[in-house]
Length: 72
Image 1 (cartoon, rainbow, N blue to C red):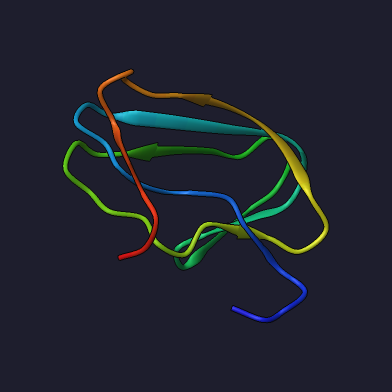
Image 2 (cartoon, rainbow, N blue to C red; image 1 turned 135 degrees about the vertical axis):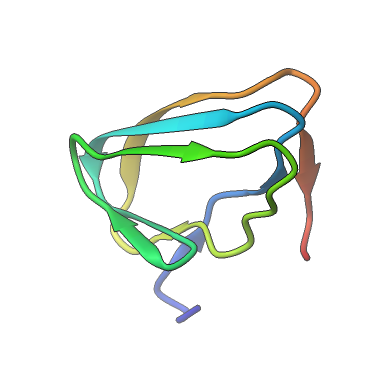
């Protein structure tokens, strides 16, 4: 990850997680999400490459039991 990117979170969803990008762009693992894009994270998956270069606004729906990780 370059110095100009901002890391958003690392998570291990205990239930399926959902992300809907409203504004900006977000690099989610290998996938670049843009406004209008939707991503579903399966339960038990780990995401350690979530970042934004210029900022983004997204709706994130996760279980309150998800584990937020400092690093992977």
